[in-house]
Length: 83
Image (cartoon, rainbow, N blue to C red):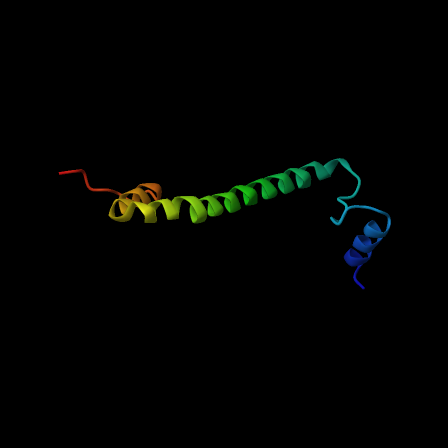
């Protein structure tokens, strides 16, 4: 058994959370900050995918032919000026 796995198993047995402990020291603040950024950005990415899949794309499909300019505008594609 590797040392990291033993430390994780010990942390779980002692009633800790299912995340390996960061250790003790003043240098761990940046690991916590990185975890917060990582979790926050993944929530934003997943939320955006859910909103597009279940709200925006069905709305564009319901618009019929007028839905294509809507999707083009959402994705930042250049559009031709109206004639």
